[in-house]
Length: 339
Image 1 (cartoon, rainbow, N blue to C red):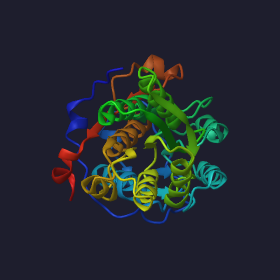
Image 2: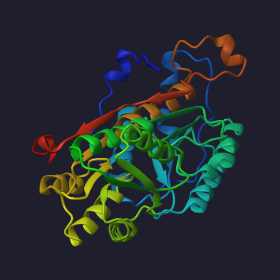
Image 3: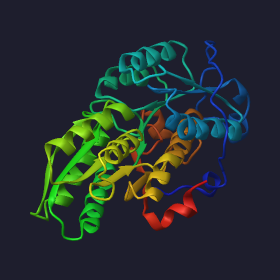
């Protein structure tokens, strides 16, 4: 689906910042409807937009999601806050959303980490809070908008890369990620579909990594022991790549067992430069955070050409979903991308 953005959006640039400040519990000024543009800009310093995630201390989230959210808030002149448990803790994320709902923020930007978030997301929507989900969509929730990458393609691209890199070799392929997340499940399926065309390459399964380097390394080492003809391992989180690479190096399989992964953190790029990782496919995380935040602002201010009659009818102005695209990275690209 193609989304047409205004020139106004394109002029909003983002850069680097630090992690967000502690969140105040004070409620915000009630959202206004049908105001003129000049009125919309009054008292925006009293508005608060809140990002709720799990694993809020995960460096990957801090460097990308939180930086982009902070810069958007600075550009808009509004308060932004980041809340959620420091580690991968879905019940903790649910509790954080529940707590934020009670303070009635201007908008909620929620990291879609688990299907179990559906009920509390619906609660936020029912409370009249503009609510955008990013990264992974949540089935059976009534979020106003979802923004993220096409994870089916991210998996499919990894499968295509494996076939190309194998150069006719046959063998087994496995995937590591977080089982049950809608985006990763789509990625697993994309990988399998790409490999189905090549009877000499067999997909042997998807394995839980618990989003840690340690578990990814352990699972990969077991796979190497179980399958002497292991051809490749594909990772689907920022933590799988370093873990897979660690096991491959420890078992002296670098270059023999191909490694592909999502994301392009400096650690992954350095491993690619070493020849341990052969292919990466990167999300545009800053893009979906930025525009997700902007959609919240637009909903709170009715800041577009949505006909008033539809707004009165209860129709919101945000798009249903936005695919923000991906970036493919090969070894020849590394020197240009390493900071």
